[in-house]
Image 1: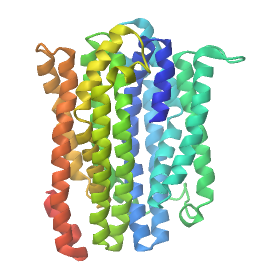
Image 2: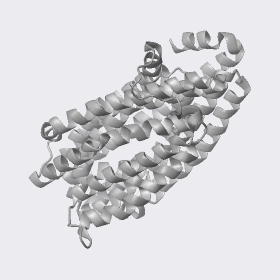
Image 3: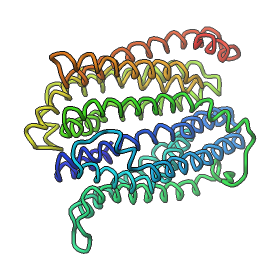
Image 4: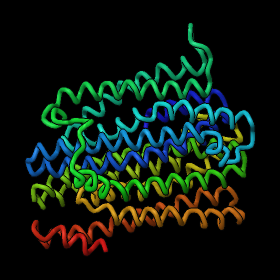
Length: 432
């Protein structure tokens, strides 16, 4: 979260147009992040399952498969973004030529270092499977510190560094991701129990790759569809001017105080449930989910209150232009209504994935997100105007935040009643 917020604080000092450029290009990085969740989630869950069963050799095989898939998918995304940079940015129909040029430069530079981001995501999942999320925190904090130093130096120019603007923000991001990657490699060397048997250029059994893809595919599909739909919404928003695009970018980053916290607890819930599911500890599956939901309820209430009652104070941290702030205040208040529900949905999705059953939250997420487009078109055609688009996002999050947790509770009860041996079959029937 701090990576993105730091970038927005410094880019916001340049201009709202610069924020719009980064926001448009950032949509494709969001799309790539969704694709990276195939090896990250699949590798994390299957590695945790095998660690829970006490099979370290099998766990290392899944770790190897996840890293290999990350290399393949990351390379593919890099080639696509570099080759089609110009038409990809043209999709948004941005209004100013300078904003378009900045967006193209930002996408090209960040795409050049995309492989580091893919590997960092997978390493994060594998260390979580080991119960060592502190390693991810330390590596990320080191990269964050580098980003905080590099951003102003490269954006505004300091000493021997020229003023690079948006290009400087992109370069700072790539260098920070490289630093995180190097520290992950160092941490992996210190964990030979899992990484000591990883052989990047040795093909694994087909079942290894298929298991990873089976678990990671639907969450990845949900994430990529979500980012694609967000691009369509951004195109609708662009009709209200580049300032509106800047608001969507900054507002979504402010919202990350909710969804990134929820994603962290979803990871914790995922691993705890996956390990105990593998070990047959049904009592800990239930208690882990309950604890996570109680914590996320408290956090969701806090963030909703923060966005509803203090939107202007928060938004002015990033952009001070009055006309942009006015739009941003509306965005935060409207989205603030749904923060609690978003937290509950994301945490419950992690619980589903921990059981190795990602289909239910993915389907709910895809349908809920797809509903935003017709809803946004309908509501924006009323007196609500641009606020109608913001309400389409908030209302869909509320519905998903009710359906996904309720569905998981139903399936969890079935799992607890059926016992360890028949759990998988029972969960499969409920999912259908």
